[in-house]
Length: 183
Length: 187
Image (tube, rainbow over all chains, first blue to last red; front, side, top):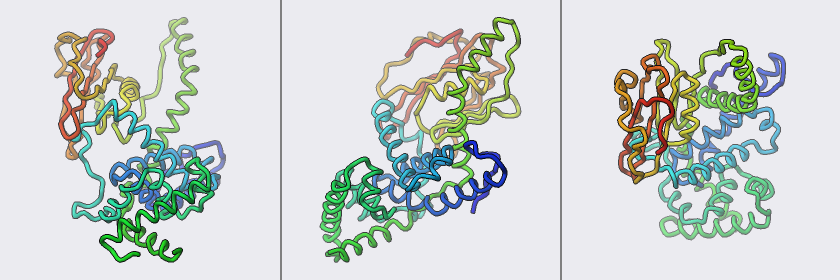
């Protein structure tokens, strides 16, 4: 587990013991949640390196507001929701300020041998879904959220979540069945 | 059907298994500290302005602590021990925030990020000579652009104006730097 300084503590909880608890809690949360959050956001936005930027920023904001986030009923969903909100903001800005490729060429997608990337067939299948279906199915698969929590996270009705999940699952199975025996 | 759904989900989980965060916890908490400080800075801005106004009224010197490094995904600003300020730009985002961080680091500067196809920014005219004494530019190993700025070499009352025009996807951007008297012209 990575070390972090106890000087960098958000909030107003006083005392060394409380601060150490915050540090340990956040470090444990980050360690346990970061990969699942990255997989969820990657599945939604479709770009592994962009997703890592978004998730890193979302975890940073979680740390900045840790006294609040630690009490959230689904902190991992909070991180993913924050990352997806940042993605929307980034996309809106990008329509006005397009970063040229050579200004952000460093690919944090993983080692140069191509590991660290999701299965290309699965990514293609996910890209074939409408964005809302991608969000619902990604939260279900990678964060294992139930319909109620998914609904609260996305700000939609639980029944809508169920319908989106059913359609997304059916579409994914149909897409993948062309190359795999999943039916 | 439920079993088939779970098989599909397991297949998806297995296909994403190699996807793992490469960033470490220190980077996240450092950035979190920046977010928190900015939040507090916003709340404290009014108080700082009041103190500055009072100091000006009483003709007192206004002192402060050296700016802490700003490390963001899009860019970084850091005051170096030799008196220079290092600037790294990775993405053309939040020009106003970058300008503010440069000013906090002791560089009177304005940054403009312009969309592709923008006309040349000619508001500064020729600008003042001596820009080479103030600014060095180099390309980092990752392709990002790095500047080393010497605020001590800037004549009093001048502002460094950095204008970067994005290219279309897949093409390079270009930049124009000027050292101007007073406030830079609008692009």
